[in-house]
Length: 478
Image (cartoon, rainbow, N blue to C red):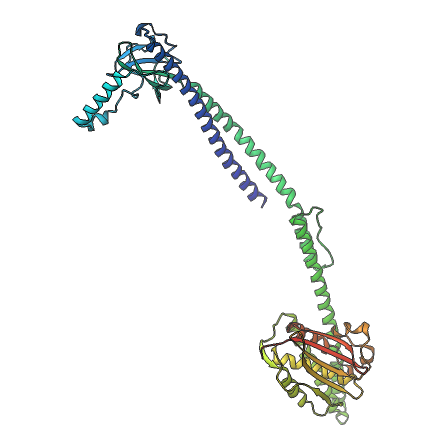
């Protein structure tokens, strides 16, 4: 990751610097060319002013041709005046107010030629003002000194009227060699400085990324060691308040949840093994005795232990499915009908169950099988502790929910244990007899099923005395 980040950052900086350098060079050359244009225009206007003042062509004050070449060219492209280095040479430029392109001359017909001649006559009859005439500009390459070869110049073309009234064009140039040299030097300096700068950017990016990712590497190393099985360890949390610190905090919270879940799982397995060991040991003992003494075989005891094992295995299987995230069905269940049908099957209970339910249907959404399991577990728990009274009631709540109540007249549940009884393999002191108290999974199953149905369950005091289990479920569509 550090390598990819370094390469990406270096590439981005290289592109940005290249673009910025090209922009700087373009602006620099534009400014230098504009400066050369101003110099050429100034020189051309000075010569035009002299001609307008009546100066003779042979006595014009012309600057050095190597820096500022100047020519006065007639309409028919004859050089009328020039610096000594340019004498005998053709015009230094082929543009200007009195110049037309060769292609235009070939394409124009006689009418256009007549119009052009009229315009030339008009311009000849109207003296050009050197102070207001507009100059035209162009770039040319001139050989002023044979030893130097062609050099770049910025040339200004300015219309002028000679003392005799003849129109002409003043060409004045300004050397661009200085501009090109300045741009080349700037480009060379940029190219020389680009490589060290990119090296610095790459090094800084590598070091900064390494420093930034150091806590991530520490978290990864710690997690690799934690994977060996010690979930009590935690990853280091950086002091900085950034994304890595939040990642470490979330990782530690996840490890804490995993440790708690693993501890619950180990405890669940240990409790399940302990609960299974007793009926299995009892079955083995009875079978060994029956094998040695067939006349002492007690079928009732074997059947009771087998039924207990069957119920315990079913409870453990249901809890395993719930822990795996199994979601209940979304069927419409009439809770009043479910209570009537389930309690009608309970024949021969120690205490008869009193039912208080309305005549109209009360519908909830969920799994009928699991809701029946909830009702059965609550009634079994109530009958186990009741003295002479058990009641089941169903009623709608004012908040649009449904209440399922199971009430008994037993000893009740102490307030300190009202949350604890819903934990797995928990039996209170008066229910520790394994044959009568069960394995301590019934209420744990009830809570898990109710929560997955979007409901709640809590315990209050019964009237009079005893326990009052209240299940609250979301109401379904009637």
